[in-house]
Amino acid sequence: MSTLKKILIDKDNSCKSVWFMRQAGRYLPEFQKIRSKNKDFVKLCLNSDLSAEITLQPIKRFNLDSAIIFSDILMVPYALGQDVKFIKGGGPQLGKFNQDKFFNVSEKEFSLKLNPVYKAIEITRKSLDRKKSLIAFIGAPWTLLIYMLNIKKDKNEINLTDVNVNMNVVLDRLVNFLCIHIHNQIEAGADVVQIFDSWASLIPEDNINDYCYNPNAKIVKFCKKKKIPNICFPKGIKEKLKEFNQIVKSDGINLDYEIEPDWVKKNLKDVVIQGGPSPKILLQPEKEMFISATKYIQTFIDIPYIFNLGHGLLPETDPDRVKKLIEFYRNFK
Ligand code: CP3
Image (tube, rainbow, N blue to C red; front, top):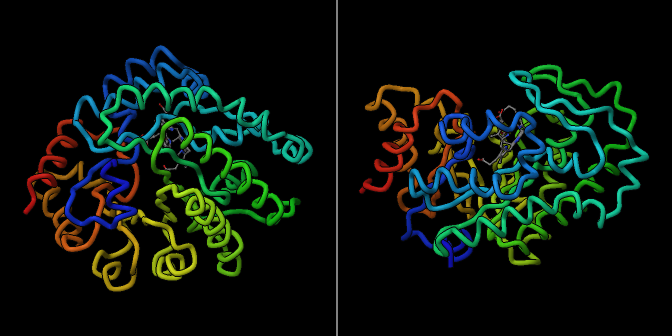
């Protein structure tokens, strides 16, 4: 059994495990080399051999405990018929949301478009040590909708006034397709799923149930029925994490860097904790990086904890720092 499964399902507190969000990415020269020859990011995600190669890059370099498949949460809107482009320096840009198209895509068509992702998982699993976990992922319905409807004004604000779709119906249809995507990734050889709700902080107070807790809970319920270990990452919801945990009941919760580890220990029960430290700690002088990491590692020393960060590794991160942080965690007593 992979270490992540042991920690998430058996709540095994005796094994250590470390991986990072965006561990395969722009901070790695070996990724940059492939990326510079593959300008179209969606096409790169659909190249199964390269996707598997990129997934394994940080495992080869750092011997991490888990690999996360190289893909993107926006491959789901792509498979649902929406135009998806990644503009250099400008982030993702999606074509206008077409309701007719969205409601007419068949499940078969959807899975077929994502077949290269499943193939990449198969290839990766073959070269990955059995003890290591292969992590599949999805974007939570709300976070996908932020991009699909293009409703984010800036980092802290959304504009829901021009939205002329029935949000709950669209969210439900997304839940359905996301469960299919999880199922297909697990069938292909992944053994854990992480659910990214990166923009949960932008949900209006009155809608938190409908837009965050309920869709996440439905997906987790599906995972539990299929015995798929799952980790939720509702970023930026602060003390609402307690309510999230009581309602959604995922196997694991990834912390962001805004929530205090002491608060988490007191308030989040019966759930495996993952992550927490800001990715910026890797930009600090070495001693300070270790102090920042210690705050989390020490607090969670006697509960099942997976070491990770409070968001993805930043492109300006020195790979040597990543190595040092992994060593520090593994040698921590
Ligand atoms: O974590 C991993 O190593 C696995 C691969 C992965 C990527 N994106 C690759 C990627 C995962 C799990 C994601 C998730 C993702 N994608 C999220 C949720 C996590 C989070 O960051 O909050 C979101 C919101 C996206 C959407 C997205 N994809 C954005 C906003 C951007 C552009 C800005 C940025 O953050 O880099 C991407 C591009 C992207 N996805 C890159 C990578 C390696 C960079 C591509 C490049 O320019 O080379």
